[in-house]
Amino acid sequence: MKRLAILTLVICAQATAAPLNDELRQSESDRELTALTRSVETFNRVDLLDRGLNSWPVRRQLLESASSFVFVSVPFWNYDQAGREFVELLGSRKRALRDLELKVIQGWTSPWLSKGGRKVKGEIKDIADQYLLWNSPLWQRRFSFNLFRGHVHDKFLIVDGSKMVLGGMNISNEDASGGAAMNGTHDTDLVIQGPAVHQATEIFLKVNQLGHHL
Picture (cartoon, rainbow, N blue to C red):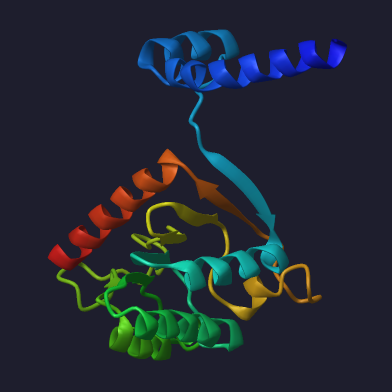
């Protein structure tokens, strides 16, 4: 008898869960929840990826699963083992899916600091639908020797508008080997699912259009 009562309660709870969730997502309910918790419910799922040891496998999985588009924005993309691997992953996915939309924004920096960034540019331009070298000296602007002024510092990897990696890591051996090698950088990324990914996609596209206009 007791088991029957518990089973009945579970069934009733499941039956009311969906309508309750729908009600909680309404704007009025959102405001009430915000007032109660003193924080905004974003409905995003966010997982911390501590160092490259955990971030790089997630990046590979995202690229291998891409079916609609991949947007990448990064200030430093070195032409080392990790950098070449990233180029190869993008190229492989693009060849497998010709309709895959690939847009890349790479920050311009001095050839002495880029560690092969010019080679990355050459190879990415061959496979990307759009490639933007942000704030290069060839832009119609007053050139500054302050390399970090006006520097793009977004680090987006957005896949299909459903998932993204956002954080502190550039595309380089030092970042990729963090936690796995003594010389790896200690930095973190976030992998995010939810409305924030749509907002990041909009930000990327606005920056991309602005850059091509300039």
